[in-house]
Structures are given as structure tokens and as C-alpha cells.
Image (tube, rainbow, N blue to C red; front, top):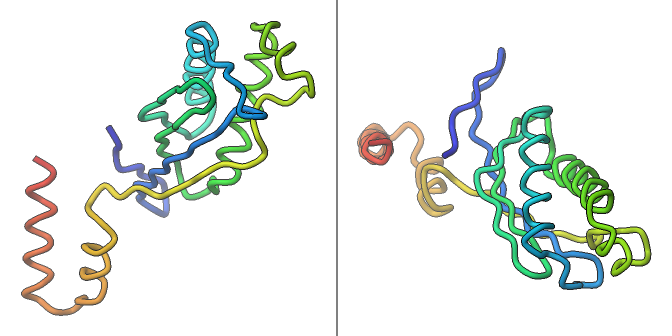
Length: 149
């Protein structure tokens, strides 16, 4: 579950949904590779300000739901994850290294989307548009408080 991250000069809830395909869209995610990936992500979260909220593995790609801090851009986050996980998977699973002969585990591209803890784009847009309108602020604030419980 996401949480507010409190730093000395900001409070944030930054949640990203990443999708990363394996190189050549090869089917490389066995149960063992899946386990190594998840263990490596756990280690990443201990060393960096990245929390893995969910990891969903399919045969040839992975979905990550990640919370991080403003000092890490989405590009920095995914480069870090791809680099560290690829090294660990290649080190522990030689069969994967043979299957992906080029020395790269992940495809160059990825999908990223932001995820809101407090509502849809339309809800947030309406909230921003109606700043200063007391009635609207009170209603939206009450809705957000209700969603916390």
C-alpha cells in the first residue's frame, strides 16, 4: 500500500506503473527467474528509495507498481531496476543468458504511467480548476477523507 513520503522539504505520493518486456520478447520468466527477480527487487528497495507495491510477471514481460521520491525520475528508476535485475538474473540463471545471446536481458523500451492515490485525472482536473471555490473544495476534501478510511 502506498504511503506519504515525508522529506525535509516535501511530502509526496509518487506511484508509477511500468511494463518492461524481455529482450526479443523471449519467454524467459520461469518460476525460478520470477523468484530471482522479486528477491532482487526486494534488495533494491532496501538500498534505494523505491518501494515495489506489486510485481506481476508474465512469460515475456513484467509489470511493476512502484512508489518513489521526487528526486528519482521515472527514467532513473527504470534504468536502475533493469540494470540490477539483469545482472542478477544472468548471474543466477545461465540458461537465460544462453537464450538471450546478445548480453541484454531487457528490451530498450518500456511503458510508464502515473497512478493516483486520490482519483482519476478528471477528479484531479476538476479539483485544480475549482481552487478557491469553497463549496467545491469542501466536497472534494470530504471525499478524499472518506477514501482514506
